Image 1 (cartoon, rainbow over the protein chains, first blue to last red):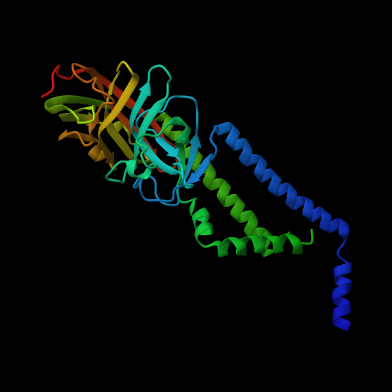
Image 2 (image 1 turned 180 degrees about the vertical axis):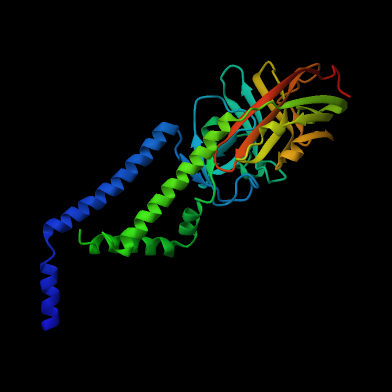
Length: 180
Length: 167
């Protein structure tokens, strides 16, 4: 009975105000991160301003675990640019280089064929059934810069989700148990 | 304020900030390098020039490419991706760029080269507009850094022309 009494006392002694302050601080941190992410989307003009390289198809330039910074402008797509595109039906975007570009004179629409630097064949096999070219609406951005190795954190968290839960659990525990 | 947790956190944050700063400076230093690459491309032979069964023109060429891209390499360069594209205009398309050959150059010593090859990628038009067509051959290069901003440029060489008839 004494132990239960002590536990009840310690739960009662958690001040409501302190708990609310901690909850609000946590909320502020999460919303700040969200604001920064959305601002990046606005500034770079791309739906995903940062992507992690997942495959070896652009080696040795981009290796698995590198981070690419993307930017999308209205400038026309030209051969040689490294573009990030998504194919209808596949959710993971692909980062390859444009090797052929045909731009219509009147409408400015463009047909693009891509190929990974480390692949022997072009990407026609990756496009949707019957699709021979990529169009502007498939392309999410152009790669303008990169940082090596930083993306491994994301890859590990995606491939072994247990690590994600451990991390979030540990962070949550840290927040709750810190006295100030 | 002096527990292990706080110290580790402060150290980690500081280390990451310094690392990001160093990467940014490394990338920024690339702006100050003096670059003067040069290249020459010669078409040695038109191997064949045909119209495919479903209507598009296709041509196969043998190219002689001489280039000196050594000045593009800085200490922050991981590789240089060089490719040769044929650029031309048709009545339907304002611009067509077809990559004919590419190479990845890892080291400065290999950046000065002479190569004679037939086109690595097929030169196919959208249509049958290639007879007698004037086109430019451009040598593009994309410098991929060890960290930071990638930059690209090209040399345009004009004056090439495809034959007036299929062969």
